[in-house]
Length: 499
Image (cartoon, rainbow, N blue to C red):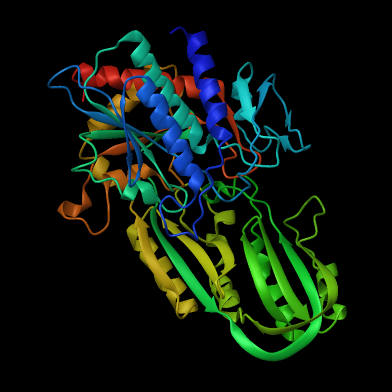
């Protein structure tokens, strides 16, 4: 296949995959958490079988396995995840293409993707850029990785390229805590000795990540005697961004105003009946004695909004009677217990953070989830102690570990990745601190396993663009093409005995 045919193939796959709703849900314990992920796994399996490969639906997702043409070659695996983030709308994705000539990209809904916010955008002048309409996310994280791997498999089929064993691991529910990758059994599900995950920004090679834990605070509903008042809907505005890059991407965390809003409702002798949202915006339903009780919101001035956006807006409805609600004073206490300067909105580089992620009302409970992230284990332990001290009753669970130290034991995986990316045309390989969860972390290390938690060495390679987890997400055709070629050269490295 020539470059034009590769470009046509990977573009068609990318669009097809993006238009399947695979948004995962953290509140759902089953894996996969949503049916669209299984739908996409089945589609990829059918496409792989049509190419002559073995495809197996597994508890973690889908495994596509190649035949083993060459004996005594190191088996490797490629990985990508099937789900997309619930931080923005997933239903009804329509992919638009733009022949990028520089400057701003105006989306169908009027939103703008600007080099002022995405500094790397200008290097894609002359490339094809994919976006959504601006009403949903795009899904390049990680359908760019899926499309690149599937096109790589198509290339091998068309060219009849000899190879050793290659497993492709397509996992469920990465966005909800690396749940699919955690279910990969390194002794039974793959023969790979190295795993290369394509779930990163084009041009980046991820060799570290946070040590991560999650905190959960659960507030049960409580009954009250008949309470009469006026229904109020309250919206706390924010600006969503991927939390690891919140400072550089203009994140405005809606949770920062939540304690003040809850206190205002409490002082008005009102009651909260529902609350849902995240750092990009929180919606509250409450009952208050009168509209005057919320008048303070009209004059609340949040200087983080430079465009004049009102931080809190509300609307008073008709008279209501309720018999229960939620005392959210512990939620306010939890948020106030996290210093603003260690929030996702204020940290970058090698800094860790503590950041409320989402709050949901479900089955008679309000559940608040918080991210605890640090590149250093001792700092993560300090974060845990701080959260426990400020929030009695909070539950904290370890999630994944920084794999950087473990990868020092197998430097060849990084050297070969660098070589393959260079051969594929990546002019400037970057390895910044990976400020987000990566499946490479749980492939390489896991808490609680024997032998110091060592599993299969893994690094994270680039495929998509930027703005992931938001409606301003974009991806480039050039980035996916480089990912396809990187996979080709990694196959060659295994054949040539470099691994």
